[in-house]
Amino acid sequence: MKKPPHLLSVNLLLSVTLMLLLVAGCSSVKRYKSATWKGEDNSLVNMELFGARLDSPGSVVHDRNLWDLSAGAQTQMIQILNERYPDNEQFMGALSNHYLAQGITMPADLIRKDLKMIFTISKQRDYQALNVSSSRFSPADRIEYLKFSLEIPPDYNLRFSNWNRYTTEYGEIEIADVSFSKSLYLEADGSIRETDAGGKATFSRNEQQEVKARYLKLNGSISDEIITVEEEGTREIDLTGNVIAEVSLEFDGFPERIFIPRFSGDGLYLAGVAPLAGFRFADVLVPRMEEAPDTIMANLKFEYVYRHVQSGSKTFAEWDDQVEYYSGRVEKQIPLFLKKDYLPGFYCIGTGQDQTERLRIREGEGREYLLQFVSYQDASKVAMWLEGLKGGAGNEPVVVGKTVILFKGDALIPSMASSGKWKVMPVY
Amino acid sequence: MYYLIVRNLGSPRCIDRNEKDVYEDGMSFDCTPRLDCVPKEFVKEVEIMCTEHPEEGIVAMVFRD
Image (cartoon, rainbow over all chains, first blue to last red; front, side):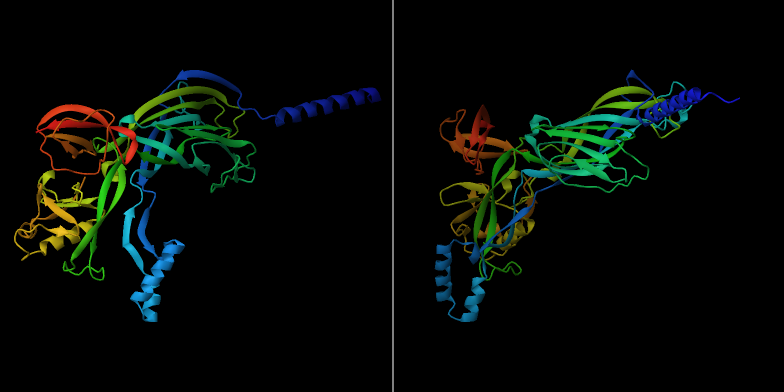
């Protein structure tokens, strides 16, 4: 039997409407099928400081040549060199000489440090309870939100000064500021895009599956004593994995005077025979802490939201998941770095007994200082020079330039200097 | 003799000495010297400043021999 034409058109209209509704329904991307908050569970996620490295920002070579001088000083210097070296070749050579502390590298900064911290974020993987209905684990579970902070106790006189870089599994951002707020987008072709005003990012991860709207929201801040990072992953972005936080730190400063030995002759030191002509000094800042703790500890706090898939974990897509959310909060003490990482590497000369048996010096105006050096080599050269004073004049004090060398409050005399008891020791 | 002693990185240092107890809170001293001192009796604590780094106060101890 043939249907009347008006019924055919009604059927066609209904079919088209249904198809349109179906297409519209399929194209709306759902986050989940259902979601409930189940409560607190502090055991689902763990975070550890996997490793930390402390570096000094760099060192400076303290020397000068003719071209570092001002225009007037250059003219005077050239005139002096011209008088001293009439020979043209010697004169030309002298123009390239280095003056002051030739070849001596001074620590540029002993109170500023660059700290690189690798944090491992892990979730509980309880495969044994996979088919247990009360289990809080499925292979589709992920950490959806994580906020962590690292706090340095005020006793250390140590503070955060700058963010340098933050790296996650999904990308790396260079910050160079005190705060940041960025999103890392995973593009459909698998590449990752960073969105933010300014900043540069390099990415290495390739996604094989097609993704359209997956991104990781990141923001962080830094204050004197606390760094805080907040991460939120959308659509299959699991925050499990390693993150690397790179920051700059700064200790409060305490002044120290260090000495640089200057040997006469051509500046070359040959088996302890070069005479010590004098000391130059440099004032530097070292970390100011009353005590020197073996380990600098920090307080790590993290809170998270854990997305447990109660049903729907068979598919990679998340729209069919029945989700149960758990939140957690953990606080723990973690070691940041060790004493050897922050103590200045100064050396002095002494007998190896107590601190009173270290060589000090008295300068012209009567000030007395510990005779301390920036390197073991400098201290060792001076100790060998002291040993070489055998046969020196009886009770005349050992004077270097205008400086008197002291031992236990008295001026050092050659017979005492050549006693063979000197040892080079670290100051701290 | 009175001695002014500060402690940094676990190491004490005598930065000034005087025949009288002239030391008061807020005074500034050159903190780089290490003088020869014989501290025997603790007298008091004062908060001083180092002239090389005057932003922060530092706790010092006054001793006498």
